[in-house]
Image 1: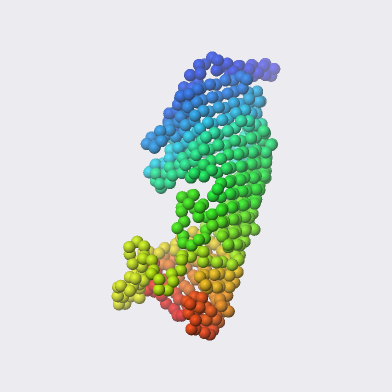
Image 2: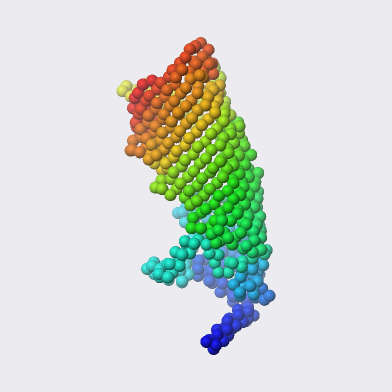
Length: 523
């Protein structure tokens, strides 16, 4: 045993001496060429170092490379997929020998990354060549040895292993300076570009709080990032850890303060705060300008408690403010069933819809011509006589197929309560709407609507569970005062009295024309 210990000790000393002496015995150019050859073997693409190249061992392990490039996929738009102006990595030697990683410096200067997807849908980050080890692994039967499979299962179940050497991880000067990332999808036409990427991370040890600060420019707006983690070591080992993150820019501000755990499933919860000064400006910034009429879609503010537990997502105690509309509610989502399940409850104050409506056309004024150069359905109806035997022929209804099968993609239950609704001059009092969607059947149930002294109820059912859509509508408005309603709705003051209105219709069909032609019921 003593001789064995001496022999092992001698081998370790020889290895350390070899590692320390290697840079002095082997030319730097040889080391560089070997590294580039390994990259070529692993990825099938060329890599180059056209600037400085230095490797030192003492007093610390240091790797410096300048003007580093990694070739793009054949046929790619950019010449290189990755280029880095300068890479500097410094790691303390003696802690590394003892199993701890102390990174004195990790600095990437002006990294440029071009991510591309060609017209065939193939991304440029999928590499053609594989390492011999990977190739050998791919030719096996795919069965893992019992010990390896068990170890993998145990690691997955714990979801918490900092890995060898990470327990002593310390980060010194860790920075990304002046980076740029672009994403181009030739198949969909989507293009995104991030400029001026700067990031700095501070981590004295895994048991100390990790703080980071950075910024990036996107669509000519600077976005500041402030992520923070109270105990990285606890997070890596599956323990609940405090998280505080802030994202700030002119179009929006987003913050999250809560906790999360790294386990086999995502588990997190905390307070979310979203502040958008202008919805219209935000939409324009992300590339989808709003053309909606009216003067609305200004400020948006959302706060609440977010909870994520695997496939279960919840947003509780939510407070929502859009323009002058304010409300609160609770929402949940579960994605673990055959189809996702969504539930929600929302209570709103006074709902003034006028800012969201186009300007009202006054009686006798000239109406705007229809867009697209074609006549509207109403104009077509006036211009063309109706064909005999068809109720919908004169109305210009579309023959385009209507498919309601998408209603089967989710099950939902939504309850909405509104203190009041204002549409033009029409005033609707307290109203409650329940929306149910299950197995492709959508039921919108207006259980209460206060209207000019009367009460209304309505139920609209859209059935997409079968091959042909079915629609049913029942509407009942009782004992409402006709005079104030007609004045507000039509500026007509010649009607007095208490009014009632009832409507019950059903129809079925696969297009507008079929639905109108099959209308049946009473009113």
